[in-house]
Length: 586
Image (cartoon, rainbow, N blue to C red; front, side):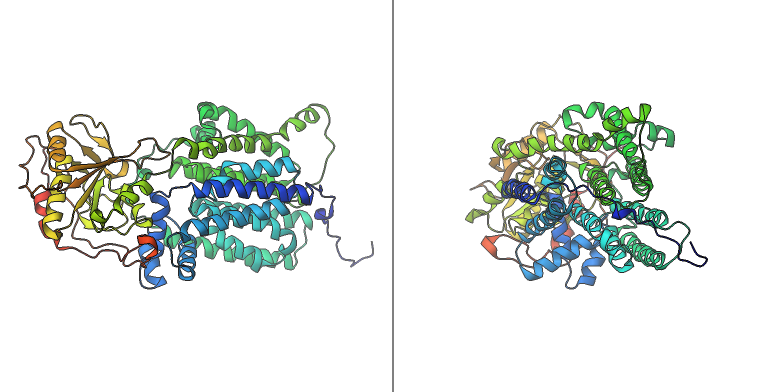
């Protein structure tokens, strides 16, 4: 080589790439997946966490007002902006599930048609619980993370040297959900290692692209932080989780990802998952970018789940999608390193380690089986649709809905426009707040007293939802971050004597939104006087100050009587709050 000649760049991505599945197999796989996902979507009943997002997305007269309402809710703004924009184009509440499905379908289409995998791995990636249901049918913000990660895998070989493209995708990824911001940081690390391995010791415009991409990702992280923190939901169980030591966390790492295996074997997840992860990382040992990024993402999520909040499947499955993304790029020849000849013990371990990622995907595919059969067993996520059908009766038009726990009301605005009153927070609204300012202890008599006062104040019928079929006598029923609900036989008898039973929905659900439904006043009954205070006294915190709905106004949809009405402002019922105070003894 002559002096001054350019340093050769090692383009490992030009190495031979496995052809993967053929076009026909890919089309067939996607069509089968699409049919199955549509079947699940048609039978899906939305529950409160899904509808809560749409309620916030439609709040406020402007986008700025919506973002102010969203502050401290715990999620970045991208999903809410997407819902608000989609609703502006098609102003119907069904835009919630349609948007989520389109996001998931687009992600699965990119994965099926572009990922360089053989058809068995493609099938496992498609029919796993995350792609088939959690990120497609369930209308939450996590499906956007899957779409952006697959877009990164597709775009990286083409636009690795374009900081605007890769950095822009990372900025968006940071604003899908908080755990995804950790994945964005891990991908930046992958990008830097890949550049270093492609041209060791050489600084050129590729590094400028990385710098630009890093800056965009940092902007995305700051936007995420500005929206998410400081959390206003100060009564959630986040602060109550047990925080183990670092060594204990590492030793029990499988416990924090136990939802990635089917429920029947989650008890041994602490043994299975570390073995699978070790196998996956062993298979990446010749690819430093994938290895270090995968370890970083795993440890980052582990810290979040151990010290900030427990991860549900929707959070944990993000690691699966990220590992698939790294495997995708590894097959394309990116991430640095070189193929090596294995020998001895390593040669015997490597074929087994290659089965680790398919095994992890297989476990999640097995978890999809109960979801596919759920529509045949009358086991929806919520009984909100059945309740909405009941509320559409002409005699219940405009009836006020109350209940305990308050949060079971949040799914109703998707189906009906009945006004909702939150007993613990003493306000009208469509979203509850996990706040310590709300009543921490509620007794059953307060539901009846609230119904009487609302009826006297508005003249409307009151529909009462009871979430517990056989509550223990006088013992608190935990509502998690909301506090406790106390039922006595005397209080329950007074409630049932003053109301008319309307329905008792099947208590078997995939979630916890099932209830007995009572009507106050009972048909033909006059409005009786307030019941005397219970003879037993219970500890209860004082309610917070006078509050209006925190989410402003929502758009109105008149489709079949469903949709979102204007959120209620402060009501004169607030003047009667003193009668609802429960004074307790410590």
